[in-house]
Every structure is written in C-alpha cells, then in structure tokens.
Length: 478
Image (cartoon, helix red, strand yellow):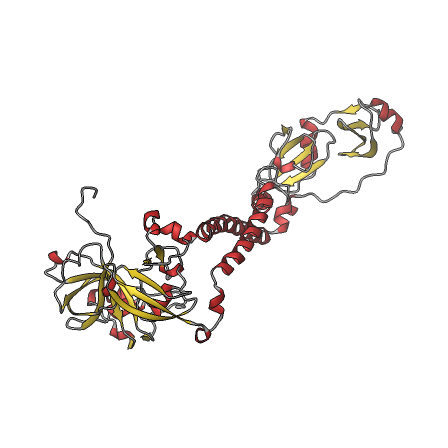
C-alpha cells in the first residue's frame, strides 16, 4: 500500500500546498494595503449634525397609516435636510415624509443628491444606476442605486433604493482587497462564508496529510533499524550470477536490506532513488524461499518476474540466510582500467570523455548500457578543474568552494554516448558538471562530475560494467 499512498500523499500535498500558498499570499497582500485607502477615508464627507426635530410634523400613527404593509419598527431620521419616518416591514423599508405623511420614492435624483452629500473628493458624479443585487453590497439585501465618481480611486457610493441611506463606499483599493479576501477565505461565490465546502475540504486534506505523513514515516522504518548493527544477529547473503555461478557470500546484519548490505560491500546496484522503492531499477531474483511481494514489488516488478522470485533489493530484508541472483553478475565485482585518450568540451559544462580500455571492449558494450566510474577519495584545489580558455567567463561565474573534496570512494553511473564499434573501441561518456546549489552553496559540487572534470589525457581510471539490458535484442517485436 505504501507506493500508491506515497503517490496520493504527494498529489494531495501539492493541492493543499498550493491553496496554502494562495492563503498565505492573499493574507500578506491584505496586510500590506492601506486601511485608509480601503475605506476611502479621503473621499468620505464628514458627518454633519442633524438639526433639531421640527415641531410641525405628523404623528407616527399617520406614518403607519400611510405604509403599504404592516410595519415592524418605526424610526425617525433625515433624508438630506428633510425629516422622515423609516418603517421596517418584511417587504422592506418605506420612507414617509414627516411633514405631510406622504410616501417618498427613492429615485435617481434623490440617490444622486444623497451620494453627492456623502462624497468629499474631486470627482464628477455619473448618472445613478439601479441594481437589484451586487457583490459590493452583499451585506445589505436591499436594491441600491450606484453612483460612480471620476476620481483616481474609481469611487462608487451605493444608496439604498428603499431607505435612501448610504450603504457602502467602494473604490479600486477596496476591490483589490476584496479579491484577496475571496482567495483568503476560499469562498469564490458569495465571499462571506468561512465554512464553505472548499475550506472544509482543505482542512480535511491537511489533517489527512498530517496523519498519512506520520504513517509513511513509521512505515519507512523497520524495528531492526533502531538496534545497533553490532547487536544484531548475522546472516549470510549468497550472491549468484544469472547463469548460476556463485560470486560471493556477504555477511549481513539481520534486518538490513539487500541493497544496503551490498552497498556496504562497495557494490552499488542500479538505482535512481537511492533505495527509496520508487525507481524499480535494483531488481534481484531470490533463488529460494521468496516471501510475499510487497506493494513496491507489485508496482515495479512485472507479475511474470514476481512469480519466479524477482524482488526489489531495496525492499528485500535479510532476516535469514538468502540466495539471490543479480543482473550484471561478476561485473559488479570486476574492475577494469582505462586510459583517458581524449576530452572534448561540448559546452562549458558538458564534455565527452573518451576512454581506451586496457582490455578491449567486447560485444557486451552496446548502446543502452552504462558503466560505473570509480571515484576515489580526493581533496583538490578549485584550480584542479580545468576548462578551455573560451569557457573562462562561464566558469568564473560559478561559486565553487576553494577546496573540492570527496571523503569516501563512491561510484557514479554514466551511459555510453556512442557505440563502441563507431568509436574505434573507445568508451565515450558524456559528463555534465553538477555545480551544486549556487545561491547559498549549501550543497557541494557533484563528486563524480568534479572528479571527471579534473581528468587529463593520459590519466588512468577504474570502472565496472557494463550494466543494463536496455538494448535492441534483434527480435521481430522490436
């Protein structure tokens, strides 16, 4: 279950992570916007004290009688300089003239005057527009009149079409803030719901990520790994070539994987993931007593191969004596020597290295195979990496450390760039220089590529191989 769980964890993490970045970025942008500009303080007219309520007004009962529906509440107030009663009912708000008891309809003329009285900028008012509903006044259910002003902030003032009161002041900065607000609360429709399905879904997704992350962490360890190797019992790992020839017997600490056990002996099985159960290249065959295939085996090893005992070495624990067959056979232990015959700088950071084997390359060296170049321990000055004069500026732009070092011998895999038959028996490798992280230099340059870029014509190098079976077989199915 681990491989597909890892895949699902990765994709859910990507989705939740992207939304988290949006949430974080929108929150940052909202905090950077000026609150005064969001509210449009410079375009708001100062509040004016209302005059004393006049004596010659009709009684509230007259106003109630003039209402169309049954009023729930009645308030006295002002509409511009005119005393009015505002009656609230289930149908909405009605405005009654307090001087004569007649209903007042809030039309475009009144809306324009109310908006102009509430505005303190230098913009010119446009003709009012009647709107039944808009996101910019989503907190108020009443239809509104929108009055736009031609100032730098594109100010809009919304006047209630029922009560004649100013509902909202909006401007360009507020509208930008509103977009970030929408992204922040993840409500892309009404922009008011903090508990919308997307927020709930992201919350559940984040919790699921945390739980599966803990599970994957636990699943990546085995109990034996917490016991020091010297305290663990010893097992025998017998290694055979595909033809059945016994190659070597390796003493292994119980609980180690085949991949780790062979690596401790200096034998690096093919792998692009470093034993992470994700590339499927470290396949071996268990000769007898093979256990049940794991999820990683099922994901990377064909069923026909699983039936004959093929498993991933990185996922195969040695809990008892075991016999395995490895692709490459004796080549894993066999070392060859070659002389650097020619070096061609294809680009500043890509070069061909032509090796002349001391033992002639045979038919096993064919397109699709690769070699393991033995990289010794070294400690060299930066100047040991040489390059042609025409690439001087490119190399000077790199931030390489003053001392280049490799504290332990390693192997690095390189594919053949040219068929041996077309290269006069030479092994041609394409090596790209890996400079590491350049901005803060937290990661050193590549150990293998650094070694390769210090080689000169006439130097001797060690290699193992060839390995790999990605080659034409000559069958009719190719």
